[in-house]
Structures are given as structure tokens and as C-alpha cells.
Length: 84
Image 1 (cartoon, helix red, strand yellow):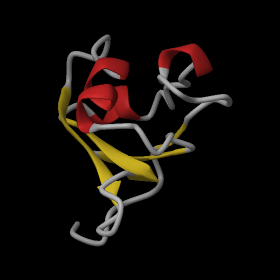
Image 2 (cartoon, helix red, strand yellow):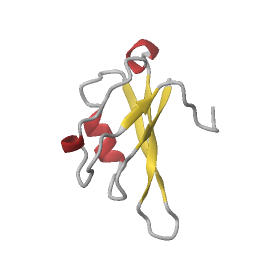
Image 3 (cartoon, one colour):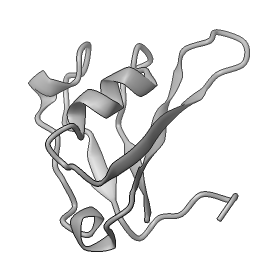
Image 4 (cartoon, helix red, strand yellow):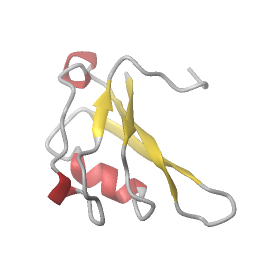
């Protein structure tokens, strides 16, 4: 199951998302949407889990866990990418 992550800072990378979700062993992949002009994050991305139950927990990220972020990132298990 793929979940949508919002409120990411422009400096966020896939490595940042992987680190945020490292406590969840079923994490399969993490990716951020990049701005083609600046190369920075658009402010959102996806985390994919092999265990749908684990993804449904709606993990909340504390602001301190996201470098450069002043408000919490939010996970939305109901959101899906266009590629699913």
C-alpha cells in the first residue's frame, strides 16, 4: 500500500522519508516529488509498504524529525499515486 506524505520541506529527499519510516519494517520504498526547475521537493511524496495494516496506522512525523521543517508532515493512507 502506498501512502501520500504532505508538508515536506523543499530540502526533503527520499533518504529523509526512508529515515522517517525506518521504524516500520514493511517499508518498501520512499520517494519525493521533485520540482524540475529547482530540483527541490514539491512538498509531498509517497511511502510504500508491503503490509497494508502497518500503512493504515497513519504515522505522524514530528517537526524535529524532518530537517528544515517547521510543522509536522502528515501521512494519508487513503491517497494513491496516479501510477496505481
